[in-house]
Length: 481
Image (cartoon, rainbow, N blue to C red; front, side, top):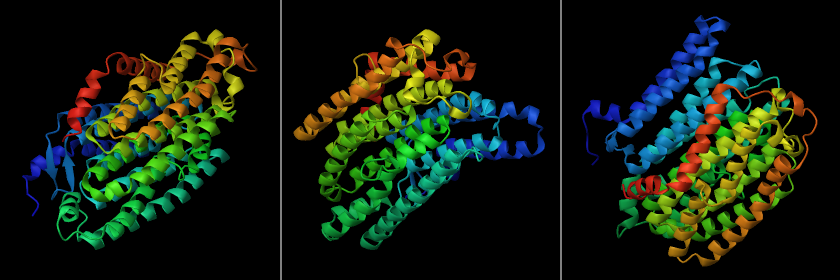
């Protein structure tokens, strides 16, 4: 039977979600009574709420809550902090963009906060139903964010594709949850683990089907092949700051759930190893080789995101403690790197996102040396160059794979990393060795909030590349809790 705890303790363990929910509701209420001139305060309110939620997440005590439907431990704390930081950076990168597009509405910030709430619920879930609830909260807000600029046909197309394909994938997950409940008699992950380890455990074939259905829903969120088809169109059509948010936050939350499932499903998870192996390889190959052909920087980063999902799946396939720690470290490095890259794209694209072609980045080092240097750093981290977070992220992932005797997957992953270097370096060559193209003289200086987001991501990328032990030690300990 689940252990009961004092109500006050339970509410303190979900304090980050409470803070963000109340802040989102407050922002929506304030928009109804405040004039347009006071809308600039919504971003600071959102940042304050996210900062308070980050503090609450780090200070939260470990333990179960609400009849063990949630479980706050080291892993949940790490991922909760990560998705909240992603929300912070997304808000910073969005403020100038929304003002430029004359779309500085309160609902945008409220949707960011609500999506982060859903992601926090996902990473702390100890019950399949809570995973579903968190996924839906995060997804519904994300669908609306993808189509936030209602007058832009690109946004409308992105939102429609994301919604239709996302709903279809979620149905698979829910069917898998129902199947697992029918086999084990519970949706609580701890109880499911006990049942699967008992002498009267259901057939591995049946539980394997249930786990595979659940994996389909999560694979969609991490844009892993063959469920990646939505990512390029949505990333290209959605507002650039939203693309940055979608590429990091929901993906981190889904990987957190995937790691939890690998721990609790035991032999059933081992059955899925060939499927994970194949998905990891397919994601790397499809993402990297498709990215080579792109002329749009947002589509390039979208296919890059698919490839990086494949790299992280390599660590998930390892199904070990070092593999779980590698997932945590890599997602932290990837989130900072990708949001920083999209933030620079947001700036260069200008009003209406007219300048998102690869050629629009030609000569950026002459126009704005600092922004070019930041984007160069992020691209080098995505390649995995030493002294960046991306280098140690890939190092730990492939080390986990080798420790689990996944030699061929490691070799193929390293070869894919070499392929990826081509299209990232192509952007560097354009920025530093080509003359500025059309509209180069129109590029204004970046606003303060965008600069804070870019430089914060750059500092984080360098810290993870120079002093990786800080995060890796925490991730290694968190993987055990």
